[in-house]
Length: 461
Image (cartoon, rainbow, N blue to C red):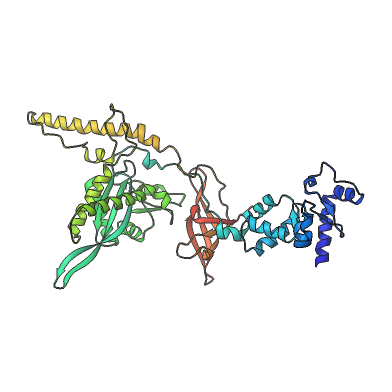
């Protein structure tokens, strides 16, 4: 095998370095235009080109292979050697692979770039450490850009159960759990909070009914794919629209609630109603720290949640300016409550007609100020993309991908094939359908965003 190895290397060197070998066989120096001139090559007793260098004195101590490795050009033999020793290092990085090549007596010309290129294409390395795919951040939906009455387009989510005292017993008290439903206006970013008794469809429908009774009818309702949302949609006969469906159909128009579900595992697509949950948690912690009570009751929890919503609706939508000519802070509470700052003193010297006129003018002025600043300042802040700024190649059908599973280690994540693509309005693919084979040899199909997938092998490759 060693003789066969030497024969293959000799043939490759003769193909790429014939001028250098002829010059050295004739007792001449390597031509000055040779790109291996800096390696000081020489021919050994087998006729192989080896690295000369300046460490000849160490040859007797560390061996010929380490001091004077064989020169390998950038060819198929070099790729086979890199692949072999990369597997010997158990798919470690470039330094490990290149070091093992060097210690086994091989000097590959342009090794750094070639080793890095091969490691970047290694399927096992992609499976172990490959980054998730992403695409340039999509355009904002029209529900966030068109001004309109608050809570016309709404995003909804449910979070954290709290234990509350429901009744007193002889031995103490009986506790129950309460969940919180947060409705977020897509246009004004105002929030409305409802407390529900359990995570059932009926409780959610009651919360939605209370919202509509207070805030008016809702057209589109956005949520994730929670089972309680899907069950509620079927019970109230709302139109369930899956985001990945390409055709919505004219029969969904003007029929009450239009319910849109995001694709599974895509919380980044619902940040406008996911992000306020973290804000609400922090505000609630601040409220609980300043209140002295032993146990929560349902009434106390409802009061706290309304206080949380009031604080959230008073938060500024944009950076607060230092301009004394513009003291008004743009917040969702201005439009929801039609009030700014402390309540005004009642005007006792006005007639009934004048009071109605003054109140109407006050509300209209506040509303006009809000929408003017909303258009001039808030919409401008949504223009820039904070991340995912460049366009990336879209995945293709039959691409081999690794699908993220948060319940198992990365080495056990399922490998699947992309079977269907769901392009966005701009033609870029951000969701796709993946087919995997589970441990029972059964095929399963999942819809996932590309941010949950790692490209292992593309169809083009």
